[in-house]
Structure formats: C-alpha cells, structure tokens
Image 1 (cartoon, rainbow, N blue to C red):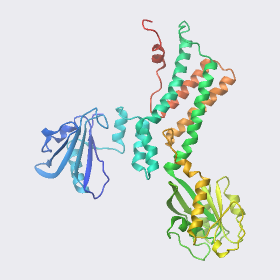
Image 2 (cartoon, rainbow, N blue to C red):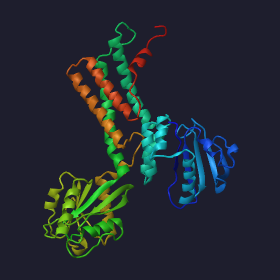
Image 3 (cartoon, helix red, strand yellow):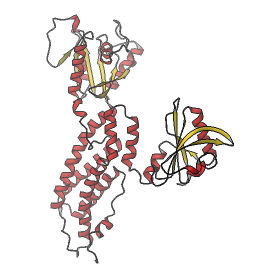
Image 4 (cartoon, rainbow, N blue to C red):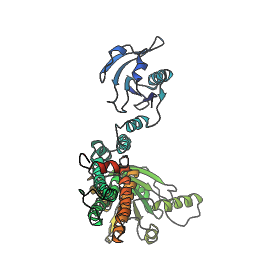
Amino acid sequence: MNDIIIALSTAKGLGAISLIRISGNKCKELLKDIFSNYNKLENRIATYGKLYFQDSFIDEVIIVYYENPNSYTGEDIIEIMCHGGLIISSIIIDIFIENGAKLALAGEFSKRAYINGKIDLMRAEEIMNMIEAENKYQLKLASYSMDDSRQNLIKGYSLSLTNLISNIELNIDYPEYEDEKVITTKEVLPIVKFLITQLNDLEKKTIDANIIKNGIKIAIIGEPNVGKSSIYNALLNKDEAIVTSIPGTTTDILKSKIYIDGVLVELIDTAGIRQSKNEIEIIGIKKTLDLIRHVDLVLIIYDKDISYTNIKNIIGPTPYIIVRNKIDLDISLDKIDNIIYVSTLDSSSINLLKNEISKLLHLPNVLNIDETYFYNARQVQLIKSTNLILKQILILIKNNEVIDIINNYLIEANNTLLKIIGENPIDVVEEIFSRFCVGK
C-alpha cells in the first residue's frame, strides 16, 4: 500500500479549525516545497508555519508529523490544523492531490490501521460506534473494545479450544509421543459445556446491548379518536401530532425520539384502526398493521366503552400495555387490574405510563453493562454460530462419535470464534510442536 491518502477529519461546515489527515509512507516529503518550516518538523511535535502554493500564501497552520509505525495507521501521518471553513481546507486538499496524494475512501484510514496491525477488527468496528454514540451509555458500550476486555474474553475461550485441539491432534498424529495425556470425549465434554454456558450468557446480553445501541420502538395504536396522538404528544412533552375531535385525523405514521430511564425510545403514532372507505386512511391503517410486527412494545389505547379486544388480537406476540385514556372525563371509573389509566391533562399519569414501559422492558437493568456485552451484528451472529457448533458437539458426544470427527467441529468452533476479533485460524502444527521437549 504505497499510495498516500488525504481527507478532512473534522466535520464539513463553518468552524474555527479544520483538521486534515494525510497517511502514507514518505508523505512528509509532500510538505517540502509548500510548508515554510518543513526543516523544523519533528516526530510528534506540533510545528507552526505557513502553507504556500506556487508562491501564493494559503494559510497559517500547525502540523504534527507522526513517524511510522507509531501512528494511527502504522504509516507516516501528517495532521494539518488550518483555519475552518470549506474553502481553505478544500484548497489545501487539492494542493496535496495535485502533488500525488489521493482522496481517501470512507473508512480507509481505519482500514489501513487494521491491515497494519494497529487495531483489530472488533476495535475498527467500535471506532464508528463511538463517533455515532448519542448518549453516555452508547459511548460506554463502544468504549469497552478500546481496553481489550472483549478481545481478551474471546481469546480466553479460544485458548481453551486450542489446547483441546492441539492435544487431540498430537494424540492422532504422534501416538508415540507419550508425554501428553490422551484426550477422550470425557475431557472434551466439560470444556464444551462451560463454553456453551458462557456463550448463552453472551447471547442474552446482546439483547440488552442492542437496546442501548439502537433503542426501542413503541407503537401507539387504537381505534380512531381515542387520543393516540394526545398521548404521543404528552409522552414527548410537546405538540407534534395534530389533535382534533374528528376521527381519522392521523392518516400516516409519525415518529419522534425521547429517553425513558436513559434508553432511547422511538415513539410511533399510527392511524386509527377501523373499517374505512377513505383511500388515504386505508393506506395509513395498512402501514399500522405492518408496523406492529416490527416494534418492541405496543401501547393499545382505548376510551370509554370502546373495546380493545380486536386490536389486542392482531398484535400477535409483541408485548403490549393496555391504556385507558381520557379518565378526566370519567372520574367515577371502576379501575381494572393490568390496565394503565391516564389523562393527558395529568402529567403524573403520563409518568406512571412511562414507569410501566420501563418496568415491562426492564430498562434500568439494560444499562448495567460491562465489557462482556456484544452488539455489533457481525459479532453477535458469530457468537450464535459458535454456540450452535458447540451444541452440535454435545450431540456427537452423546452419540459416541469418534474423537477425530469431534475435533473437526472443535476446529470449526474455534475458527468461528476467532473471526469475532478478526484473528486468523490457529496454526495447529505450530501449536503441537511447541509442546515438544527441547531436542526432540
């Protein structure tokens, strides 16, 4: 990878300072004819100077030079801090491109860091998650990969499998080597059971981790004119949905985000479910019915004597809360268990509804995260795949399968596990010979 790449690292737009990053071995030489203090550049020292191009002054800048391999990408890196704004940074980038650099592709700096062994695959994935974090819990979740905790967890599981595999291979290929214990399914079984228990726990935690990363979706549904939009506005604490006494006002889906107990919640106001001849309303009702299957919770709203039974029947297995609205119009109401009673004129009843949402979805527990939480889709799928292979091994052991076949599954499980952190499959031969005594 000999080419030099360049990109604006700060956000585009107005600002006091812009930062331009350049990576590629010998990229420092591109500054020779354009930076006034080129001869004063030292590794990891900020150097002030002026940029010129064809004898024309461009900008006063501060440049930091990072010599390989001690840089983010493992290559020589230049970071130029210039005045903000789109024009200055664009001119500087154009100058470097004219002198031989090329515009970096999305993620190319991190890709080079991965290729050059500066970061592993898991850490590369988490860098973007840190940048995109919208709250402190998302940031905390993403930051765990920066201290190697999750990587070491996976490496520990892999080590258990590696020891098994290399011992079995040693038994098979070098039966005359008697220093090592002969491995049978009796030795394999407890290790596989332990790893299944650990991965089962990881799988459960991925659910909570996904909630922290992506939040939860709550659909507000019910018949027309039961106050769905009023509850939507009350939960948001602002007037966003149109509220009238005319049934069928909401004909499309409205979405807004709030936080409940620290968890990001996307509220979705929907069209009232009823038989209708209005073509626009029919489309809205269809959208509501399609949406219900793809949310985490449904609030079923009703008022007075309007039955919610039919609506409850169409939501399927999705968790739900039944909400009796407009209780301010019926203060003598006989209350029934398992129904939340609210009035959008009473903030305390809306807070009660928020508390019920939090309790049903276990939101406070979700935020008790540690370094063993995985949520990246690729990582989660590999955890599940590894677990399935290990469970298959249990079946093979129960069926008295020979150790050679079981070992093939152990290798597959270990290689799948290592993909989580982007490491290559183990070199079984190297591992075997590392066990031989000196002089053998």
